[in-house]
Image (cartoon, rainbow, N blue to C red; front, side, top):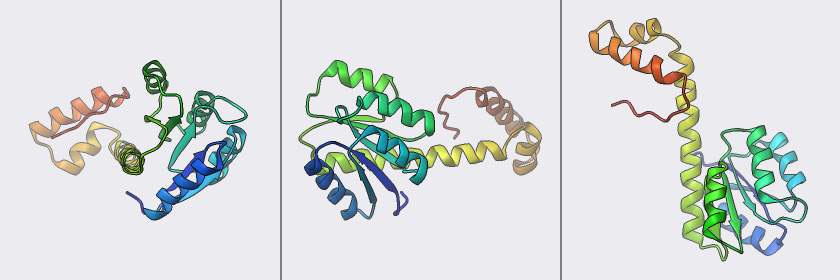
Length: 172
């Protein structure tokens, strides 16, 4: 996980922001704190954070709206929703809408960090895969880099088949 990762924290309660900032700083992460959705979207545009932690009920707009607007700006941005009023339906709706995770307040130090580091690792992996897919655009470049064997030919056709989808694929 990149040591200097920026974590954007959006919550209307300064005590929650302070606690989350302390968690992030202790792990060598860079917290960027705002208290409104509009400020969060501006920070996403200007500072390009590596993850977003957002309360479901900040003062100016719904956390789900913030998440959707953030994803429109950076589709790979992992969004971790936090709430003081957890419910199963809300968690399911958040995950289906694209949230990386959903945490209930009071926040537990180890749980927050586990979720943040998992989100950062997944983002880094997506970036590597995107760069790799740009390098391997067609069968000839794959065959060129790996050799002309029948196995590489099969692998190349499999890559071409799934490259058009947004499925996660592990090739062993």
